[in-house]
Amino acid sequence: MRYYHKRKLSSRLIENKEIVITSGVIVFCLLLSLFFPVQSSIQLLTRNIFFLIIVPILYYKLILKKKITNFGLTLGDKKAGIFWGVLMLLTTLLTFFLLYTYTDFRKNYLLSSYVVHNFWIFLAYELILANFFVFIQEFFWRGFVQLYFSKKIGIFAVFLQFFLFVLILLPTGNSFWQMAPTLVISLFSGIIVYKSRSIFYSWIVALFSLVILDSFIIYHLK
Image (cartoon, rainbow, N blue to C red; front, side):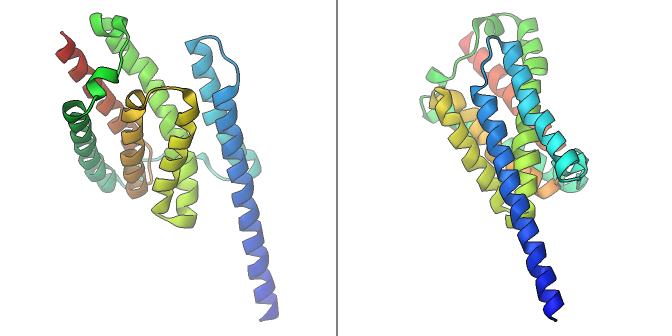
Protein backbone atom coordinates (compact mmCIF):
# COMPACT_ATOMS: atom_id res chain seq x y z
CA MET A 1 0.00 0.00 0.00
CA ARG A 2 2.82 2.38 0.90
CA TYR A 3 4.55 1.58 -2.39
CA TYR A 4 1.32 2.31 -4.26
CA HIS A 5 0.97 5.75 -2.63
CA LYS A 6 4.60 6.60 -3.36
CA ARG A 7 4.16 5.56 -6.98
CA LYS A 8 0.97 7.62 -7.27
CA LEU A 9 2.67 10.66 -5.72
CA SER A 10 5.62 10.27 -8.09
CA SER A 11 3.25 10.07 -11.06
CA ARG A 12 1.50 13.27 -9.98
CA LEU A 13 4.82 15.08 -9.57
CA ILE A 14 5.88 14.04 -13.08
CA GLU A 15 2.52 15.14 -14.50
CA ASN A 16 2.68 18.50 -12.71
CA LYS A 17 6.24 19.01 -13.95
CA GLU A 18 5.07 18.30 -17.50
CA ILE A 19 2.24 20.83 -17.19
CA VAL A 20 4.64 23.51 -15.93
CA ILE A 21 7.15 22.84 -18.72
CA THR A 22 4.43 22.74 -21.39
CA SER A 23 3.00 26.02 -20.10
CA GLY A 24 6.48 27.53 -20.32
CA VAL A 25 6.88 26.32 -23.90
CA ILE A 26 3.51 27.85 -24.80
CA VAL A 27 4.51 31.22 -23.30
CA PHE A 28 7.92 31.03 -25.02
CA CYS A 29 6.32 30.35 -28.42
CA LEU A 30 3.76 33.11 -28.01
CA LEU A 31 6.24 35.77 -26.92
CA LEU A 32 8.64 35.05 -29.77
CA SER A 33 5.79 34.84 -32.30
CA LEU A 34 4.81 38.34 -31.19
CA PHE A 35 8.09 40.12 -30.62
CA PHE A 36 10.68 38.42 -32.82
CA PRO A 37 11.49 41.18 -35.36
CA VAL A 38 10.19 40.84 -38.92
CA GLN A 39 10.12 43.24 -41.85
CA SER A 40 7.59 41.75 -44.27
CA SER A 41 4.47 39.61 -44.49
CA ILE A 42 6.56 36.65 -45.66
CA GLN A 43 8.81 36.96 -42.62
CA LEU A 44 5.74 37.26 -40.41
CA LEU A 45 4.35 34.05 -41.87
CA THR A 46 7.71 32.31 -41.48
CA ARG A 47 7.97 33.48 -37.86
CA ASN A 48 4.53 32.11 -37.06
CA ILE A 49 5.22 28.80 -38.79
CA PHE A 50 8.43 28.33 -36.82
CA PHE A 51 7.27 29.34 -33.35
CA LEU A 52 3.65 28.18 -33.54
CA ILE A 53 4.08 24.95 -35.51
CA ILE A 54 7.67 23.71 -35.71
CA VAL A 55 8.66 24.39 -32.09
CA PRO A 56 5.54 22.70 -30.64
CA ILE A 57 6.11 19.67 -32.89
CA LEU A 58 9.76 19.42 -31.80
CA TYR A 59 8.71 19.73 -28.16
CA TYR A 60 6.14 16.95 -28.52
CA LYS A 61 8.47 14.64 -30.44
CA LEU A 62 11.77 15.23 -28.63
CA ILE A 63 10.74 16.13 -25.08
CA LEU A 64 7.34 14.57 -24.44
CA LYS A 65 7.99 11.64 -26.81
CA LYS A 66 4.40 11.83 -28.04
CA LYS A 67 2.86 11.55 -31.49
CA ILE A 68 1.97 14.70 -33.42
CA THR A 69 -1.51 13.27 -33.92
CA ASN A 70 -2.09 14.65 -30.41
CA PHE A 71 -2.33 18.05 -32.12
CA GLY A 72 -5.62 16.95 -33.66
CA LEU A 73 -4.04 15.99 -36.98
CA THR A 74 -6.52 13.16 -37.48
CA LEU A 75 -10.13 12.99 -38.60
CA GLY A 76 -11.14 12.25 -35.03
CA ASP A 77 -14.85 11.69 -34.46
CA LYS A 78 -16.21 12.26 -37.97
CA LYS A 79 -19.88 12.44 -37.00
CA ALA A 80 -19.18 14.91 -34.20
CA GLY A 81 -16.85 16.91 -36.45
CA ILE A 82 -19.44 17.27 -39.21
CA PHE A 83 -22.36 17.95 -36.85
CA TRP A 84 -20.59 20.50 -34.66
CA GLY A 85 -18.77 21.94 -37.66
CA VAL A 86 -22.03 22.75 -39.43
CA LEU A 87 -23.64 24.00 -36.22
CA MET A 88 -20.72 26.25 -35.32
CA LEU A 89 -20.45 27.51 -38.91
CA LEU A 90 -24.07 28.66 -38.77
CA THR A 91 -23.52 30.14 -35.31
CA THR A 92 -20.38 31.96 -36.46
CA LEU A 93 -22.10 33.40 -39.52
CA LEU A 94 -25.08 34.48 -37.43
CA THR A 95 -22.72 36.21 -34.98
CA PHE A 96 -20.98 37.98 -37.88
CA PHE A 97 -24.34 39.10 -39.24
CA LEU A 98 -25.41 40.48 -35.87
CA LEU A 99 -22.11 42.32 -35.48
CA TYR A 100 -22.43 43.78 -38.97
CA THR A 101 -26.06 44.81 -38.49
CA TYR A 102 -26.17 46.11 -34.93
CA THR A 103 -22.67 47.37 -34.13
CA ASP A 104 -19.94 49.58 -35.59
CA PHE A 105 -18.21 46.51 -37.01
CA ARG A 106 -18.98 47.44 -40.64
CA LYS A 107 -17.28 50.83 -40.20
CA ASN A 108 -14.16 49.50 -38.53
CA TYR A 109 -13.39 46.14 -40.13
CA LEU A 110 -10.99 47.00 -42.94
CA LEU A 111 -9.95 45.08 -46.03
CA SER A 112 -7.15 45.97 -48.43
CA SER A 113 -8.31 47.90 -51.49
CA TYR A 114 -6.44 45.36 -53.64
CA VAL A 115 -8.57 42.57 -52.18
CA VAL A 116 -11.77 44.58 -52.54
CA HIS A 117 -11.30 45.57 -56.17
CA ASN A 118 -9.60 42.54 -57.71
CA PHE A 119 -11.30 39.15 -57.60
CA TRP A 120 -8.12 37.16 -58.31
CA ILE A 121 -6.18 38.94 -55.58
CA PHE A 122 -9.12 38.32 -53.24
CA LEU A 123 -9.10 34.62 -54.15
CA ALA A 124 -5.34 34.29 -53.69
CA TYR A 125 -5.50 36.19 -50.39
CA GLU A 126 -8.25 33.97 -48.96
CA LEU A 127 -7.03 30.60 -50.22
CA ILE A 128 -3.30 31.11 -49.66
CA LEU A 129 -2.43 33.79 -47.11
CA ALA A 130 -5.56 33.69 -44.95
CA ASN A 131 -5.62 29.91 -45.22
CA PHE A 132 -2.08 29.62 -43.90
CA PHE A 133 -2.76 31.91 -40.96
CA VAL A 134 -6.02 30.11 -40.14
CA PHE A 135 -4.23 26.75 -40.08
CA ILE A 136 -1.45 28.13 -37.89
CA GLN A 137 -3.99 29.49 -35.42
CA GLU A 138 -5.96 26.24 -35.36
CA PHE A 139 -2.82 24.14 -34.99
CA PHE A 140 -1.37 26.12 -32.11
CA TRP A 141 -4.42 27.27 -30.13
CA ARG A 142 -6.81 24.40 -30.63
CA GLY A 143 -4.32 21.64 -31.49
CA PHE A 144 -1.50 22.39 -29.06
CA VAL A 145 -2.96 24.46 -26.22
CA GLN A 146 -6.53 23.22 -26.05
CA LEU A 147 -6.06 19.52 -26.79
CA TYR A 148 -3.20 19.31 -24.29
CA PHE A 149 -5.12 20.96 -21.46
CA SER A 150 -8.44 19.30 -22.29
CA LYS A 151 -6.93 16.10 -20.91
CA LYS A 152 -6.46 17.93 -17.60
CA ILE A 153 -9.47 20.25 -17.33
CA GLY A 154 -11.95 19.02 -19.93
CA ILE A 155 -14.19 21.55 -21.65
CA PHE A 156 -12.68 24.40 -19.64
CA ALA A 157 -9.70 24.13 -22.01
CA VAL A 158 -11.92 25.73 -24.67
CA PHE A 159 -12.26 28.85 -22.54
CA LEU A 160 -8.61 28.73 -21.44
CA GLN A 161 -7.33 28.91 -25.01
CA PHE A 162 -9.89 31.62 -25.79
CA PHE A 163 -8.85 33.70 -22.77
CA LEU A 164 -5.15 33.35 -23.61
CA PHE A 165 -5.88 34.24 -27.22
CA VAL A 166 -7.60 37.46 -26.11
CA LEU A 167 -4.63 38.36 -23.90
CA ILE A 168 -2.18 37.80 -26.76
CA LEU A 169 -4.18 39.94 -29.19
CA LEU A 170 -4.30 42.95 -26.87
CA PRO A 171 -0.63 44.03 -27.33
CA THR A 172 -0.89 43.82 -31.14
CA GLY A 173 -2.51 47.26 -31.34
CA ASN A 174 -5.28 46.16 -33.69
CA SER A 175 -8.73 47.62 -33.13
CA PHE A 176 -11.33 45.48 -31.40
CA TRP A 177 -13.45 45.29 -34.56
CA GLN A 178 -10.50 44.12 -36.64
CA MET A 179 -9.91 41.33 -34.12
CA ALA A 180 -13.60 40.46 -33.63
CA PRO A 181 -13.85 37.75 -36.35
CA THR A 182 -10.85 35.83 -35.02
CA LEU A 183 -12.19 36.09 -31.47
CA VAL A 184 -15.53 34.66 -32.54
CA ILE A 185 -13.82 31.89 -34.49
CA SER A 186 -11.51 31.10 -31.58
CA LEU A 187 -14.40 30.30 -29.27
CA PHE A 188 -16.56 28.35 -31.71
CA SER A 189 -13.59 26.49 -33.21
CA GLY A 190 -12.68 25.43 -29.71
CA ILE A 191 -16.07 23.76 -29.33
CA ILE A 192 -15.67 21.90 -32.64
CA VAL A 193 -12.24 20.59 -31.64
CA TYR A 194 -13.41 19.60 -28.17
CA LYS A 195 -16.24 17.55 -29.64
CA SER A 196 -14.33 16.01 -32.56
CA ARG A 197 -10.75 15.84 -31.21
CA SER A 198 -9.59 17.10 -34.62
CA ILE A 199 -8.53 20.49 -35.96
CA PHE A 200 -9.49 19.72 -39.57
CA TYR A 201 -13.17 20.52 -39.11
CA SER A 202 -12.46 23.75 -37.23
CA TRP A 203 -9.88 24.72 -39.87
CA ILE A 204 -12.41 24.32 -42.68
CA VAL A 205 -15.14 26.14 -40.74
CA ALA A 206 -12.84 29.01 -39.78
CA LEU A 207 -11.60 29.54 -43.34
CA PHE A 208 -15.09 29.22 -44.82
CA SER A 209 -16.43 31.72 -42.27
CA LEU A 210 -13.80 34.31 -43.15
CA VAL A 211 -14.31 33.87 -46.90
CA ILE A 212 -18.06 34.38 -46.51
CA LEU A 213 -17.57 37.36 -44.20
CA ASP A 214 -15.10 39.09 -46.52
CA SER A 215 -17.27 38.34 -49.57
CA PHE A 216 -20.31 39.75 -47.81
CA ILE A 217 -18.49 42.94 -46.86
CA ILE A 218 -17.03 43.43 -50.35
CA TYR A 219 -20.47 42.90 -51.88
CA HIS A 220 -21.94 45.65 -49.70
CA LEU A 221 -19.04 48.00 -50.45
CA LYS A 222 -19.80 47.96 -54.17
